[in-house]
Image (cartoon, rainbow, N blue to C red):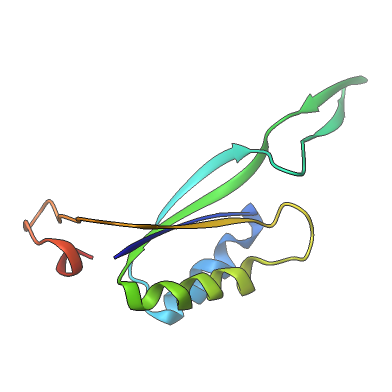
Length: 112
């Protein structure tokens, strides 16, 4: 099993969610996060005073899938979330050794 963590721009969430639903993804966790990479934040003006926005708002999507589905899901996220501009995000794929569904006690692939 694989855990896919995708950090994307907030306005791309609906597009990514719809594309993943079409692939048959039945669940995901979405979190509002902040961070910076090459964007390095920016300066804004508020009531005549300048201030630096160090962390840029992003969306983090987490999905756990079977090994055979991971590449297709990653490709879908990349093509759907890509704008071609700096700050499009990153995707991290890691191995998952165990999953347990709390309600039923099912484990691993059955728990996904």
